Amino acid sequence: MRCIKCNTVNDERKTSTYCTECGNVLVIEYNEARPEIQYPLENIQPDPLKNHPTALRRLDRLSEKYGADLYAKLELENPTGCFKDRGSYVEVLKAMELGADAICLASTGNMAASVAAYACYFKIPCFVFVPEKTPDAKLAQSTIYDATIIRIKGDFRACELLCREFAKSGNYYLAGDYVFRQEGQKSFSYELAEQGPMDYDYIFVPIGAGTNFAAIYKGMVEMKAAGVIDKIPSFVAVQPEQSSPVVEGIFKKEKIIKEQINTMADAVAVGDPFDFYKVLEGIEATDGKAYTATENELLDSMKEMTVEEGIFTEPACAIPLATFKNNLDTFKGKKCLFVLTGSGLKAGHIVAKYSLSSPILEPKLEGIQEYIESGYPKIQKSSWGQSRETALPSNINLEENQVKLYEEYVNGIEKKGKTLKEEEIKALKSLVYSTDTSLHYPVEVVDYKITMRKHGLVSAAVKLRIEDGEEIISLDQGVGPMDAVLTAIKAETDSFLPLVVKNHEVEILSPDTDSLVIVTLTLEKEGHTFTAKAASPDTLEALIQAFVNGLAIANKALVA
Image 1 (cartoon, helix red, strand yellow):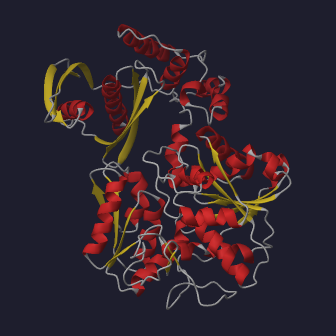
Image 2 (cartoon, one colour):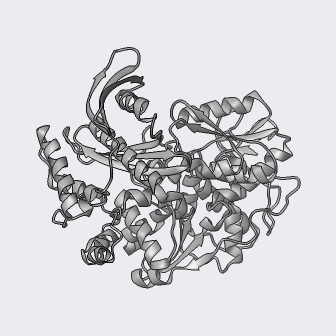
Image 3 (tube, helix red, strand yellow):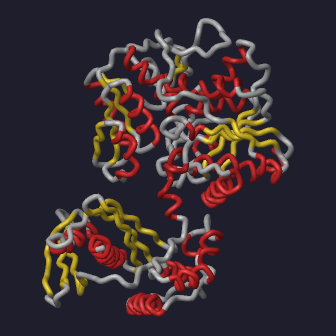
């Protein structure tokens, strides 16, 4: 186990992460080249959760469409729907071999689910550290595999640091994008070689920390040294434009660390790419390339892969196709392999965010026929990948009740001195079109007042009109204005319809200071989940109306 920077040979009983001398990354080297895969384990056993190779598919339609010979390796077929399983299998076995009492890691998604699955199977406790605001939906897989979820105040960086401290505080194995994970993930290359000739011109790999890229490349190097393959294909490192420290670093030939990253492809949203120098080595040694793609290009390619080839992937897997299309002059006529790292079932929130919602229709056949002929379903299909504010034409026909609701929105917005822009009109009509106008509202917020101090909690006073016409004032506090006003409303409404706020999203439709804001709340009661939305130039008012809408939606659903 050698450090790639200072060449110090490290002891696995002292570290499985960074070099004990200089703090750089490590690489496993073997005494001899062998045609079969080698693992840094005393006793290897077959992967108990994975009983067949992930499929290698020729992308016939896309190949014909773009004039190239395109293939995809469907890593989404791994046990937890993600490539991480290859590495988790080895990491958990290594933790057991080292006699660890438990395994711990900081992760909010794929790696957490994967490590939890193997730890659960091998009966070793697993602790997953996550930031406080991580949605429960992202932790569902880890939870079902009996991982202990530890929510920490602060951001993901705070979780990582605390998890490392936790690992040192006991006999705990720290899992992550480290050297033993790379050894597990290199099995991709050996498996690929067994599925057909290794005559690819290019292999496209989505990159976050860089560990998977480094692992696939390492597998190829080992196989070439053992005479299993004659040539290593050129590697193409691909990242989202909004999270591309590796691609930027490749051109500058130095590691780049980004403090802020923001991309829908959260599986590769890594500001500090752990294995950057291993990626750089792979690019230089294979005369490789590095590209980025925009968020809209990712959405377009994600949909294209699904519609043309029937392969539903998470957004990170769309980067290979997107960057391929952006550079057709380079790849025309070439044999290319796309590494599709994870299932689209992990990205339901992305699909929901960039799809127009279906309106709620009355249970009448004639109304359904009118809806089908209205053109809205066609707009739904064609609008994927566009930002929500441009998806729905401003001249869409609204029903009578929807027109009334739309006018109420516009009147309230104009009273605030705000003039709606064309894109905001589209967004508002889209919201109204998908709103159930038959809802019965058990409460109305008449007025509210927020009191903020330099130190201490924010106070909120909310005047509510209850169903019977009675008006009451509810007082409470919170850590911020949104928390305070919601807490004050819930102090009263929880007495007759208690709802738990599971998540909230604020979408600002333009950079202007008076931009229309759409707030989306995810609410829960007795295991039932409800989504409610509202719009206003004022974020607090949009939040309040969204919660009131949620009360009405929940009330109707529970009565039904």
